[in-house]
Image 1 (tube, rainbow, N blue to C red):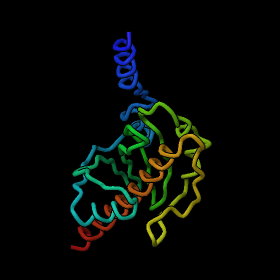
Image 2 (image 1 turned 30 degrees about the vertical axis):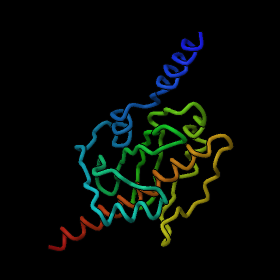
Image 3 (image 1 turned 135 degrees about the vertical axis):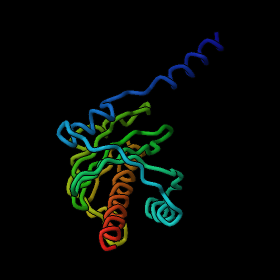
Length: 174
């Protein structure tokens, strides 16, 4: 009997993935059903160090998928909640968060971070000189780890967008 209960718990913890919005749908909505091609940004050592320092978390990704058109970029990031990654879509326009969406949620608790009353706090946020968000984000009680995951995803997206803008300026000046 105990074995059956333990097997049931293991199965339940592995089946907590909830897809709120497929990546393709997020990208189509962001770019009005005419999305640009997906690109990959290679994360080099200096950029990886900057992200790790500002988010106070190790950053191990080698590439990050993104879509870019005009001054708008869309990023798909997987940030760790309490125990599982949360797939988050972030749109940055002219150096500010335009929107943030929870695409896939895998935790047992804290799902409230997907609602507009929480995600709306990020709209218009930009990076300060210290690399923090210039907006106060109120974490949700019972969803602290998930709240922090969305904050990290916002900071990372803003850093990556800024990095892309710098690279684009360098290429254009040549």
